[in-house]
Length: 469
Image 1: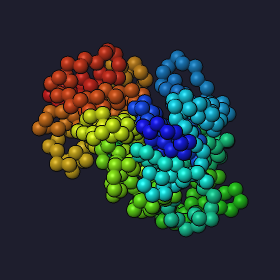
Image 2: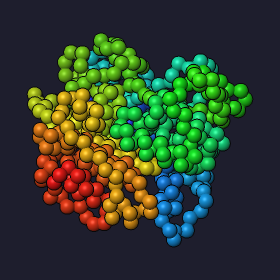
Image 3: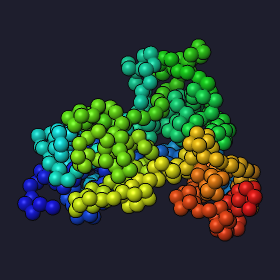
Image 4: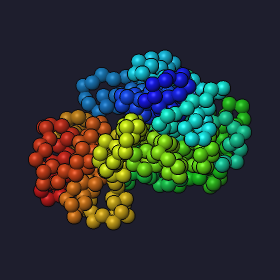
C-alpha cells in the first residue's frame, strides 16, 4: 500500500454495499488493504431489507402454525395475528434503517460512501462530485433487479415487485402472483397464510421448474392445500387497474381480479447504470468472470465482480462465498502473482458443482448440486435413487409426514453429484449433502456416517440402502 493517504484514493473500491459488497471489502481489509464501499440505498442490500430476511420472517409463523396442527395435543388457534407477523418482519429489517450495518462496516475498517457509483475508465469510480481512485481493484457487486414482462398495459399499471411484497404494511384481501419460481411460491404461501386470497399463475405445469420434479409436485400440493389457486400452463397477456382493483388477462381469455399483482418473473444483473461502457462492456449485460472473480473482456487484473451481476449462482450465500474469494484474491494479488487452482482459497469452484439452495415453502425444498437431467446433459453416467422420507424421525416429527428424497450418483466415481430433499423442515439436512458433494465422499465411506435415531437424517441410511450398500 502507498504511504501517502489521499481521502479519495483506496486500494479497493467496491460498488454496491449489499451482503456481497460487504464481504469483498471485509476480506480485502483483513488482507491488509484499504477499501471504500459505495451504496446508493441501504448498506446491507436486498437480502437484509427486501428479500431473504423479511420473506422468511413472513413465512415462519405460518409454518410454525401448520407444524403444530400436525401434532395432536398441541393447542393452536385458527389463524395468524397478521399485525404481529408484520411487526416482527419489520423488526428483522431494522425498520429499513441501516445504521447497524454502517456501524459494522466502519468498525471493520471499511469506508462507507453514500451515493450512486459509476465506472469512469480504469480504476476510476465517480460518486456525485467525487472521483475515487482504486490502486488495486474495483469490484462491482450491484446485484440484480426484477424483470418486468412486456404485458399490454403494464407500463401504466402499478404492480408489486418482490420489494413491495416483502415490505407491505397490510395484508391485501386478494393477491395475484405471476411466476412460479422461488419468489413466487414463497410469497404466494406467505400471504395466503396471512389471510390473502391468492391466485398463482405459472406458464408450466409445475412450479420450481429448475429443480427436480419432486420439488414442484410437493410444493404445488402444499400450496393447493393452503387454498392457493394454481393456474398452470397459463400465459398472462395484459394487465390494467381500475380504481383499487387490478385485472390480469390470460391468453385463454380468463381474467383474474385482485387488489395487488406481484410480478415475480425473474431478475437480471444490475449493470445498466454502472458505467461498464467506459471499460468496453455493454450496460445491462452479465459480467462474466473467471473463478477468481476477474471480469472477462477488460484489460488488466483490476475489475472484479461477485454476486448476481455475474449470473453464476444468484443466491445470497453463494454470492458471499464468491465475494470472500474476490476479496482474498485482490489482497493476494496486491503482493504478487497468485495461482488459482480449483478448490483453493482463490477459486469459487463450488459455483460449478455444489450450489445449495433452500426454498422456504411448506414443504421445504433443499437441493444441492446437479439435477438428474443436468447430470445427464453433462455426460455423467448416473444412477438416480428416489424414495419417500418415511423414517422414525419423520414420523415423530409430524403425523402424516410427507416428503421425498432423491440422490444422483456419478456411477464412475461412486460419489454424489446431486441431492434433493422435499418435506417439512428438511433445510437442516442440506449441509450434510453439500459436504458430501464438495468433499467427493465415496459412497462406501459415506455409509459409515451413521445418522442419529430418531431424526429425519435417517433418510441418508435409507438412500444408501436403496442404492445397494
